[in-house]
Structures are given as C-alpha cells and as structure tokens.
Length: 263
Image 1 (tube, rainbow, N blue to C red):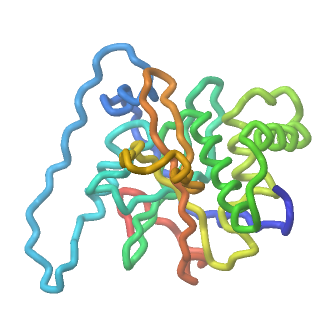
Image 2: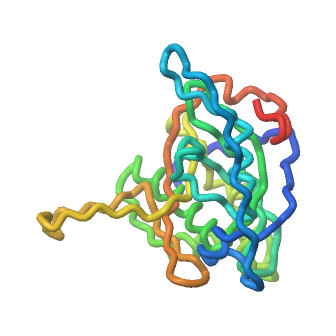
C-alpha cells in the first residue's frame, strides 16, 4: 500500500454546512439510525414544470438536488432519477464514541459543468472505513493486483494511527477515519501517479441481474464496489468508487459558497 508518495486532497476554505439532525423512514429501514418511535415520512420535494429545452437538454434545479440530499440525516442513496449524478468524497470526520459519526463531504454533481459543495451528514463508522478501504483497493489495482484484505488494511492504518496519536484512542474508529483522511501520508483521493483525477463515491442499492443460463464461473466481481450491511435488519447496499478526470481549474484556491447558494 506504499509506493510513490501521494498528494493529499486539497483543502476548501469555506466551513461545512451543518444541518439539523432528524431521523427519517429511509434511514431507519436501512438500519442506520436509532429506532425509538415511528419517524415522520420525508416531505416530498415539489417539482415545478419547466419548458422543454430546444436542444433536448435535461435541465434540473440544483437546489432540488441538494434539498433531497439533505432530506435525511444519514448519507442518502443516490441511485435515483434525481440523485443519479451525485457523487461524494469524505473530507473530515467528527470524533464520536459510538457506531455513528458526522462526516463532512465534498458533494459534486457530474454533468458538462461540475457543481460542488460541502455538507455534513451522519454515517456508520464501519461503512466509512469500507469506503476508505475501497479507495486504496481501487488505486492499488491501477498499479497491480490488490493483495491486501480489509483486516490487513485496517491493521496497518491502526498501527499508523497509534504511532502518531498514541494508544488511548486506538479503538475509536471515528478518530481513525479522520486520521486516515487528513493526516495519513500514505492515503489520498488524488493519486500522484495519475494527473488530474480524483476518487469519488456513491451509496446505492444492491442491483442484481439474474441469468440462469450463465455458469458460476462467468461471474466477475466488480472491483469498484464493496458491499455494506446495515447495522440493523438485513438491508444491504453498495458503496461504489469512481475515478473522475478533473478540470484544471478544480485545483484553484477558490472559496466554496455555502450549500444554500451552490455554484
């Protein structure tokens, strides 16, 4: 997992946007939120009719996309019509003692013109660790076969964390996640051996396509996805990684406007 020294992800100057936390039905069904009483259904986002574009462009209001992303406390599934172009990248992790933490994400909409913002949402710490592990597996696969398991990767990252931060917090996985993203010199979303690319992620449902005529030997595992299980119930979902070519002005030191005023 070592090699040429990677570059760390760029820092954006605007502080993240914090939302009022609430528990909604979607998060509860996924087992990602505390289940006390039946939560209210999320109020659907009203869409206004827009005239057809003369060149056939599919035009959407960006605010509607962000409103849906913000409609629940936990990271939203994005394999929907409204969110199909949304990808995320974790930037910082809040220290928390339990199974869940608050994560600051860089959220982008992939289209001919990329839109981006920072926002916070909750996430199971183990799911975030799987996301960071997937990042290293994808980048390693560009150099050669990824030969390390999750447990091997976790042991190496924990050892690096203990060396820098001591043993007192060695079991706090939210602090470990933040260390990996912010301080680990061996970790990056922007690899130095490939110019002008970044790794982004999305949380999606498990999609299965059956074909009884195919033999088991024809199955090929997708190295850009990792399966995650909800902390409650039997719900499973996928975290998918994508390497995106980025425009040259992505690296400009620009100020990110608040999420209520996306650009």
